[in-house]
Image (cartoon, rainbow, N blue to C red; front, top):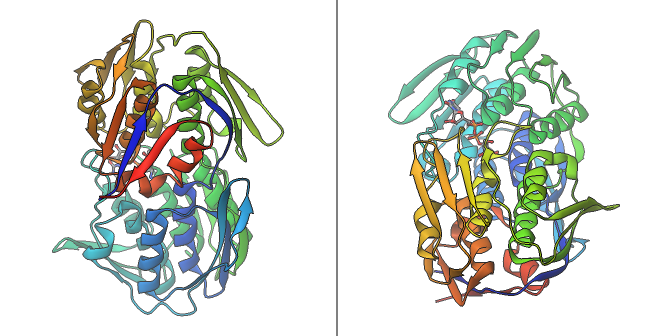
Length: 430
Ligand code: UD1
C-alpha cells in the first residue's frame, strides 16, 4: 500500500493548477443517466472516486469514453469525458459498488425519474458520522415515490405516470439530497419547489448543466430552487467548476509552510469565508487574472476561531486542514464542527506530530505550538488525510502518512503539485 513521505521545512514557491471539483463532477456524471443523449464534461479530475463512479454508471448501461489526448491545463491534466446512457440496462445499484462511495447512492434520483424505479444499496463512504439518507427518502416520497427499505436496499418506485412535482422543504440543509431532488424533479410532471435547499457552488453547477440539457431550473444558489418538469432532457457540453476544497487546501498549505504561490484556474468567490480565515491567520491573499495568489513571508500564524456551516459558511471539508494550520499558531483557536458529528479523527494523528488539541463536544481547542516533529501517521478519511500533509510540511524531519488511498479519492497529483513548489513530498510504494 502506498504511503506519502514528507520532509518538512521547505517554503512553497510557484504555481499550482487547481483541478475540476470532485464534488461537482460526481453529481454531473450521475446527471448523465437522465438522458439517452451524450453529456460531455470537461475538466473532470482524475481521481479514484471518479473512476469508481465510472464503473457504477457503466453498470447502469452508460457508455463512457475519455478523450484519448488529455487536455493540457497548466501542469495538470484535465480530462474531457463523454457519457451516453442510450438505454438503462439495470436500475439496481449493488452493495459492492455503492458501499465504496457514498455519492453513488445519488443515482437513485435519475433512475427513478427516467425509469420509474430504482433499487439502490444504502451507502458507505467516509466514516465521518452516521450520515443517514432520510432526507433523500422523504424528499423523493414527496414527489410521489413509493419507498421501502429491505435487506440493506432502498427500493423506490414512481407512480404510473411518473414523479409528480411538489413542494418540499428540507428540515436540514443537505448537499446530496438537494442534488438528488433537483435531478429527479427535472423529469417530474409539474413544478417542484425545494425550500431550505443547499446553496453550494456545486449545486449551482449541476443546475447550470441540467439547464443546458433542457431542464427548467431557477433559484439555484438561493435556498429556494424551482424546477419545472420537462418531458425529456438532451445532451450538453459542460465544464466542471474549479475545486474550492483543493483551492482552500493549498492556500492553507502555503499559509502553513510560508512562501508565495499562485493557485491557477480557480475563483476566490467560491471560498470567501475560508480565504478570510486564512487572511486573518496572517497570509496575504489577492486575486489574479486566472486565480489566487497567496503569500506568507516571515510573519507567524495567528490563532483564528472557525465554525463550519453550509455554504457560504466555512466548509466542513476544510475543517481538518484549518486545524492542521492552527496547530502552529501563536495562541489558542477554537474549531467547531456543526455538519458531521464525528469529524475529528485527525485530532489524534495531529497529536502524534506534537499538536496540542483537546476536544469538548463539537469543538476542538487548539493550542498552537512553536514546533511540530515528524512521525508516522495514518490517514483516516479524505479531508483528514490532507491535514496531516499540511502539518507535515511544517514539521521537523520525516512524516510518513499511511493509508493514502483516502487522499487519492479527492486530490489529483498532490505530491507532484507540492513538489513543483519546492516541498519535499514523495509517494513510497511498498
Ligand atoms: C457533501 C459532500 C461532502 C461535504 C458535505 C457537506 C460530495 C460528494 N460530498 O456530502 O464532501 O462534506 O456535502 O458540505 O459532494 N443528512 C441527514 N439526512 C440525509 C442527508 C444528510 O441527516 O438524508 C445530514 C448529514 O448526516 C450531515 C448533513 O446532513 O450531518 C449534511 O450532509 P450532506 O450535505 O447531505 O452531505 P453530503 O451530500 O453527504
